[in-house]
Amino acid sequence: MRTLFRFPNPVNEVSARLVAGGVVLQCVAFLVFRQWWLLVPLAYGFVARVLTGPTLSPLGQFVTRVVTPRVGANGRLVPGPPKRFAQSIGATLSVGAVIGWALGSPGAAMILVAGITIAATLESVFSYCLGCMIFNRLMRWGVIPPEVCESCNDLSSRWVNTDPVPAAATR
Image (tube, rainbow, N blue to C red; front, top):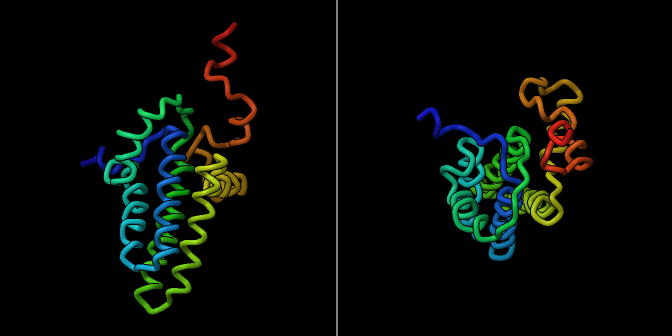
């Protein structure tokens, strides 16, 4: 049971982007059809991914087992804690949308899902993880202690050096 509730670290960025694409499709379906029950798999997926990564998430399982291997792109590994933080924001917004709808406020639910749609689109299309950037800012401000993610102290370094072979190994 202990390994079941474990978020992966590091995370395959290709898989994360593909999951975000699936989230965009779920959000658009809800925004177009306005059916409350479409919020249930969206919220469940986020909560499952926060708790276990892709293990209990149907979308996460489909992406990691079926889609990512068929895409054939070599995934770049990125730290897990910022991705988990981003998933927790999605979980908060999607559960909030379910609650808003249940309390008779479909407009609030639509706004929350629209926010998820924007963030998931940024991740899936542009590889810009809004939750990861917030995580990085919170680390800089000292809200999140450095030991939570040692490799996260400077996310900008990931865009500067994308060479998979460390410089020390080439000497």
